[in-house]
Image (cartoon, rainbow, N blue to C red; front, side):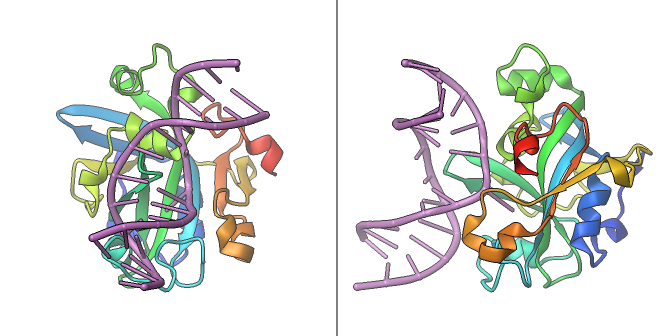
Length: 203
DNA sequence: TGCTGGATTCACT
DNA sequence: GTGAATCCAGCAC
């Protein structure tokens, strides 16, 4: 198991990192419970010239960590209820980030099901960004955490997602971003049962 | 100090 | 298919 190193996160192409993250394994150790899940859906945000990004032309206390060096965790609350999990990328001050939208649980499944109040493992468990953080027990407390040296990190299990297995599509929920909302910066693993169910209609 | 709206989810019909 | 839940950041005053 190779834990991803700083160099993986600090590359300057956030879109490339988003693609590379597909098939990688997100690991969390919260309250002594280890949970692992394969990343099957990501979304890229470019802080400098992407109106969909929180960090676009406004540096605030909330988005401060996006301006830090790649490899940091950016969590924030959406609709007052849901925690969304982002991975900061690129060099310091550039504010790029990747949103993890869906995962496939592979270890600690009992804990995942318990957190999600489910009895069996199915798409429902982790096919949305808010569900991912809940399933993995990621909360706002993890804001600013360093993935390189902490209880939350990403492993490379040698799974290589073929270019042909990646579905590109435009991002959702960011209509306010105008033309930037049309960028094909959302990436999914083709055929994986845990990706968001709307992918057929949105392509 | 107060108002507004959002990178959503889930229960219910 | 639809609507309610729910809270904080950002901005206006």
